[in-house]
Length: 138
Length: 306
Image 1 (cartoon, each protein chain N blue to C red):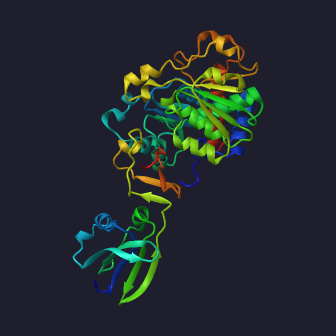
Image 2: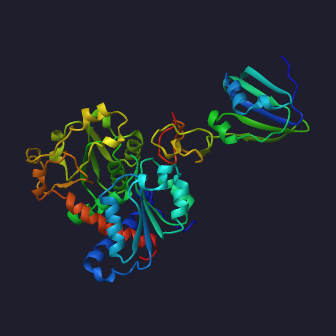
Image 3: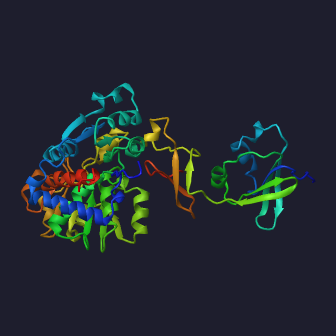
């Protein structure tokens, strides 16, 4: 199966197999009017299977959100058909307006204008806690 | 805004700063005349969106004894919060009137939001079931005055550990000292939250959970009793089922150490029998006095006066 390379745009590589649609929805890629290709279950020497998303334009990506969803993703920025920049994602130290605190005792549950913010407290378990009430994101 | 010091959590203070506050508190007792006008023309706002006796009154008494003045409200119903005003807007407004703000709010994290909205120092007087750092300072001063040290103590916390903010703050404070052991006494439904367990594990302190006070009392240097808090329950049935889980009486104290210190942040309901009040080990009203001294020291510290 052949899919053309991106000339000016972004390639999201090493997406956990089966997760590409979730990322497509999170990034609202359906709103773009350029060509977007989702390639699922590609053979990968590193992970066995992986997904890839190719976006045929340069857009600003929320790397924190992407890193939170799947920190194994590689973001390749392509210009004039050449790799301009490769970014290896990691779990972000803080998440701002990515997830919401579900603790009914938290101040964010009653005051809507407050920015939801979480901090990474355990990298191995991918645990984040609300900066206001310390509740764990579950 | 960067140089403003707030007290949201007890860990906002270094051990040296806590020692410094305790020194000031002791100096206030030794030389009250040197402090009686030290805060002249300064104003403390006490914003209590939730009822309080000791915390609010001790803050107000502290500021008055320092020669300052006090403004504020003692319930959300007597402020514009009753009209739906946000914490952010209330704090922005009060920050125009006061030099320092002590606040209590039922929602966790409200003082963090407040500190983001003003250049006036914010003191957390309790935020939901989360933290209550000035109670912890009170507890630390009581421990220092009664035990003479913060090291090598076995501390039993008895009651509601799920919502008991005073216990959470005390654990966080004592984690930083040497040779501390915690015995957490509670019904299974009111166990300490995971994030407090993670902090105890990360600090490598010894801790255990038990359900019966009788099984732990003889090994304790400090017994910190807390109330099962009706206002933290979403379900009245659960409150009624758990409210009488622990009642400390003279019979149970027969097995305790002679130099045990019995502490309680107050108010109590029935978890300490009144017959215990005359026991020399009962330190909870002494603790209330310590609360005023340490809050005086804290006000001076956060205003940059001492």
